[in-house]
Length: 490
Image (cartoon, rainbow, N blue to C red; front, side):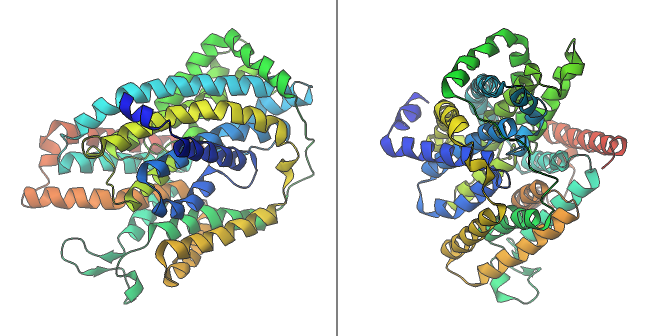
């Protein structure tokens, strides 16, 4: 592992990491554009990059996005990214009381601590889990992917049915093209351009980049403009040390974020929400939360940051995306004809351990960049939304055409932009669609391989201990999510 870490300390590698973090912080800080949009836009570029370089760039974007969201939350009271929604509840009230620098400082301190704890889990758990996964047969892999598909319902917020519909729609779209076994066309409707299936790039760009931007344009601007604030760099740096007085909150938020990150398909936003709720319930003064409580900022940011490295564990060890961002990391590997999953540690150890090293490098690089951005982005945060939308659409069109050199892919981009827009206004979660689109073919391939080995029998799913445990977990997870969705109104 040490050899792969040292290999990362090259000039071009560091530049990719720094570039990724800077772009990620900008995406996280600017309301209306997020890390998912940024990573979708960057995906076509990975065609022309080395696999590990692409992962370094995307992981930097991932880390930067989660870290940068709190800047807008603190200075203008608008969550820059979904992971910083809970931070807004206390960071912005602190800024209104003249403590913007202190809010930014403790947020940055909590982020760094949570990210380091999570990275240690990644470093020590990923390889053993990956080598265990090598022993998985097709039925074990099918049960594992099925569990991941069930867990995508958790990314749908309170609506189990909506998340399930979105995930199944993603799987259905992944089936378009020639059957991998008998070569018969499926869902092509006689269109020759669909014989090879739907290209990953225009699908993701349409669903996750253009559709949300168009939806923002169609929504009302909101009631009035919130007051904005600024902070001085020395004051922010001095405030970072304040987190040492909140050791219990730091450890709890890091633990919650790490555990949530390890679960497939959930992500930073839910990690921050769970951590904030736990902190409030365990506080002696829960009434202070939402009015400028420092524990609220720490619990949200520490957990959100901790989910990043933890979510990489199922991604590189088992081929299951720990969050929506990890789905883009998986897509970048698949674009390079590298199959993510248990065999990654055996067939491509340089990439496996390189990703672990890239996560640590991103944590270290993010700290100074977020510090500088907290001071310098105050006036950039109010970029007109229509300018961002025009730029994103232009990049999507260029990226789609470059990735396939085909005009037909532009029609795919248009189609999935419209589908994404319909999904947004129908309250169908986009992350569930993306994860379903990526995991669906993996589930089909594993199941059909297993059925060929067992001569069409499904009994091995119930006769082997690992598939049986995973199936029980899937049923339990589906039951719990369904029960929760009935208790919590949509």
